[in-house]
Amino acid sequence: MSGNQKLWGGRFEAEVAEWVEAFGASIGFDQKMAKQDLQGSIAHVIMLGETGIITQSEALTIKNGLMDLLAELEEGQLQFDIANEDIHMNMESLLTAKIGPVAGKLHTARSRNDQVATDMHLYLKEQLQYIDKLLLGLRQVLVNLAEAHVETIMPGYTHLQHAQPISFGHHLMAYYQMFTRDSERFAFNLYHTDMSPLGAAALAGTTFPIDRQMTSDLLDFEKPYANSLDAVSDRDFILEFLSNSSILMMHLSRFCEEIINWCSHEYQFVTLSDTFSTGSSIMPQKKNPDMAELIRGKTGRVYGDLMALLTVMKSLPLAYNKDLQEDKEGMFDTVDTVTVSLKIMTGMLETMTVNKDVMSKSTTRDFSNATELADYLAAKGLPFREAHAIVGHLVLECSKKGIFLQDIPLEDYQAQSDLITDDVYQVLDSRNAVARRQSLGGTGFDQVLWQIQKAKENVFH
Ligand code: ARG
Image (tube, rainbow, N blue to C red):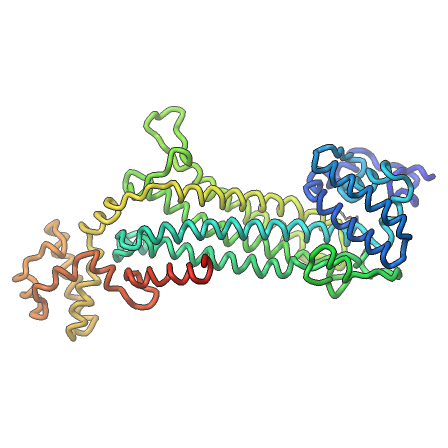
């Protein structure tokens, strides 16, 4: 035996100093994939037995040992050691302690390079399926809420200024559309994750007669990677996950920002449930939308995880490099952040009170009906530009007097344009303004109902 007791210690004469070892170790975080590591090893050893690379009885002994480790893992009994560097070597050493030197045959025709990639694929595949479920739950809550608020009127904004009145249901369905695209992006991400790197070995494949299709099937992957170099060095599936998550978090942060505004004294459009709010240690009256603020804030760390991995991967030559060990913590962090954010968002929306009357009232004393008047004149044949100018002038006059368009007497209207008759007051009503916007995808009630119907038919049948 040489002076180095590591699994790879054969060609070494000296031990690595403890602090250097700690720098290289990943067991502190990659133990999150302990289950996947055992699953990958079980599939690999079944294949080694079936192909006759090792005997069936050796394969069985190893498989049983791995199954025991799996049971112990589930009971929280496994202890990992930093001296064994990562989850792969920790498992091998635990297996050796359990079944003796035959454990050493498990690593035939395999490398930690394809092993770690396999673990990552298995782990992320599971998480993507879970995230899709959470997203579906959020979308369902949005559809339900939108259905209850098709006819709830709120101000629609541009530049954060009252622009035109809209249906609150329509506003919610805009987020539904964003989260649907997020689901679709994650589905494509799953397609790239559902591939087996196992059997690529260190980088070049192996001389042993392995069966990669068999391990791919045993692990329930769609197919094996076609190129061994790509299999061990590809981290696109994680980058896709981080960039899809960044877009999702951006959507959540926009929604949270609106909710934070809506809770303020200035808006009072919604009231968050006590269970999703917190108080202040000094100001007794405070009820803060902390959870929404935190989701907004956590968006930053997900962007950071994406930037970090993009930077790790930049210019990295083929095939495996230890830099790739830096792919894990950001992925785990983003999984945790995205899953908890989705759960909080869903719960917050489900329990939120919508102050319908406040919302719709804020469209009755404003100029968000100015477009209605311009459209009214244009529909009667006036070129839209001229109509725009007339209404602009009227708005100016009104603001000087402190009144609104609906307060102008008919005679004054007719002095401006004889196209205006007493049906104008109907047109200026904000509820009518919303109901009449029946262009495809507009905020008209029937259009909102159509969107909701489509969502129900396609997704929630
Ligand atoms: N802990 C390593 C990682 O996460 C496993 C692969 C190590 N392979 C190697 N050739 N050093 O990437």
